[in-house]
Picture 1 (tube, helix red, strand yellow):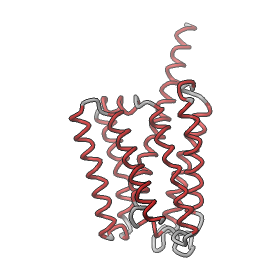
Picture 2 (cartoon, rainbow, N blue to C red):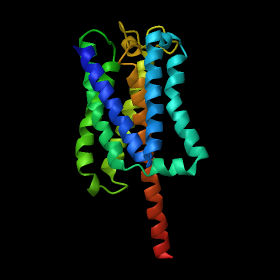
Picture 3 (tube, helix red, strand yellow):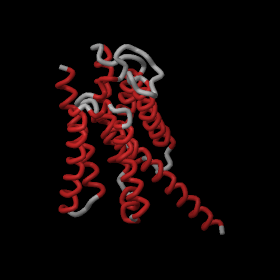
Picture 4 (cartoon, rainbow, N blue to C red):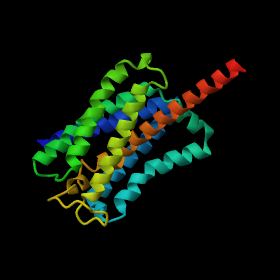
Length: 234
């Protein structure tokens, strides 16, 4: 039951993230189709790597995890247009996409089913549920939020902290990992299986990048306010 529910909810979340990215980053239909093929190909590659058992190799998970960050960093460094598009993503889409993180209850369900152990499933699961539920009123009230609203800043920091903590606990709970610090039954081993592997390898990097972009947008807005204030007093 948990497995089937995980497949449905995880792939639905992936689809929502991809659609959000395509509609906010690209204007031309042809570009959207090409980018969609790249996203779909990457998901298919991650599925293939998982089924092959390659994730059990020590360096595979970290290597795959950093790919989205590397691509985003290179794009922003080499293309002013890409940087502008990322910073212009409507924040309502970034916040709204996080509502899907409410599927974190699946981690808790896996823990109760004995498929995850230690602090990882509870930290990641409860943290995602809280961030996802808090995203609902923020999304609905987004038009009334200022660019530097403290509620937005606190939620964004909480969302990013939750993901960083989940990654740290997942890696240190993985049996056989050179980074293992937590020894608790099966630990986080189930995360190396489908469909769960798509959470740390695809969804977590996407959500992290979203939080980073949101922070960049808030910083840019704060600078514009400072410049406007300095100009008005000069």
